[in-house]
Image (tube, rainbow, N blue to C red):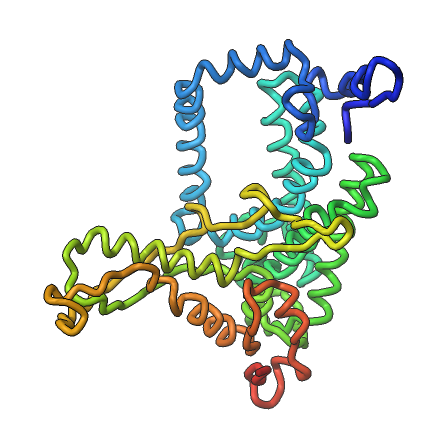
Length: 383
C-alpha cells in the first residue's frame, strides 16, 4: 500500500521514490502523505479547490433530486424505507472494501469524472447481489420481493428478515478493517485481500444468524422459521446501538436566558450519549501508546449521530444559593444520559452494561442461555 521506497545510501533515506502503480492512472493512494504527492497532482487539487463552493453547489443540484427520487420513489417515505433499508445495509460492507481495501479501485483506472460513478454502480450491484443472497438464506430467491415494499402473499420480503445479516456483515467488515488493521489479509494484496475480507464478513454474518437469531415469519410470507437466542430487533440492538430521541428535564434554579441554558444542556446530553456509545481510548499494547490519539480515531458524535433532543426547564428559585436564585447549568446535562442509554440497552437486550462505552462485544459476550422463543417468551435478566 505504500508508494515510497527508502534507501540507506549516501543520498539519504528519501533519495528514492517509486511512482504510484500504473493502474491508479496518476492518482496517489489515499495513504500517501501530502508532501510525497506529485507536483502535477497537487496542481490539479489546487485548481479543483479553487472552484469551491460553486463545485459543491453543483454537486448538491445533482444529489438533491436523486435523493428525493430514491426516498419517495416507491410511493412514499415509509414504502421506500422498506425497499432501501436492506439494500443500503448490504451496501455498507462493499463500501468499506472499495474505500479502505481497494483505495477507490477500480474507479481509479478511469478518468476522474467517471471514477465515482463507476464505483457507485459497483456498490449498487454488490448491494443487490448480497441482498438476494440473504433472501435465499431467510427463505428463497424472489427478485420481486427485493424491490417491492409490499410483496404480498407467497412472496419473500427482505425487510426486516435480512437486516441482521447485513448489519452483522458490516460490523464484521469494520472490525476486520479498522480494529485488526486488515491483518492477516493485507499481505495478500489489495484486491484479493478486500474480496477475502468481504467473504469472511459475510461468513461471520451467516454464523451469527444461524447461531443466534430467533424469527417467526408471517403466515404465507415464504420466509423460514428460525429458533435462536435473539430476535431480529435484539440482535440489531447488539450490533448497532443508535439513540433516536433524548428528553431531559432539569431544575437549574432561576433561568436568566432560556435559549443559552437549553443549548448548554443539549450539548451536555449529547456528550453523555457520546460517553455511553462512542468515546473511549484504546491502548496499543505492542507499542505502548494510545491507538486513538487524535480526533481522526477518537470517536465523538457528529451531526449524523445526533438524535432529536428535547430540553425541559423547571424553574425553582432557590434563595439559599444566592439572592438571585440562580444555580447555573454547567455540565449537569451530561449527568444521567449514559445511565438512561444503558437502561434502554438493558430493556432491548436483557443485558445490564457495566462498562462504557457500550460496545458490540460486550453484548455478544453475555448472550442468554435459553432461546428467546422459550416458555417465558422474553429475554432473561443477565445482571
